[in-house]
Image (tube, rainbow, N blue to C red; front, side, top):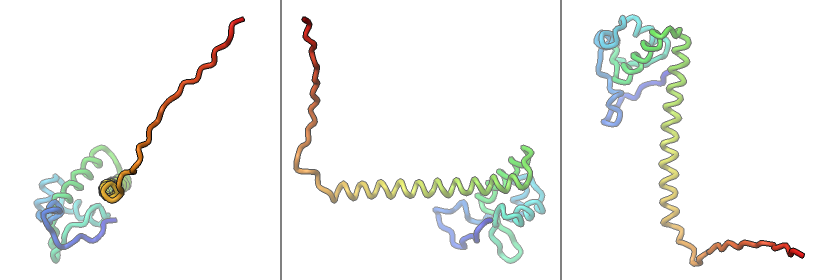
Length: 136
């Protein structure tokens, strides 16, 4: 479900930077470390691995809080899995929409600069036609 995590980090993806060992992450969320391991097995998240050491990012913690919220509302694990998957798809689509809107804006700017205005002026005039009936 989760793709392999990038191993390089910069300021743009600071929330993806691995920071918390499993014991700290489990205390932050209020879950047993074994539960976090099970969620990893199910593909809900993919913590950074350094040998046997798991390091969780801020985004991983956010996902775990979301899973906990759904579970506390009585949603079964298969339902949680589908919800998480759909939420990831929505985020991906929102990002694609943002990128496309930016591309549209840039294309409009480019065409506005490249295509000169027409040398003619077009005017529209409205005419009203009425028929008058003769009264005899």
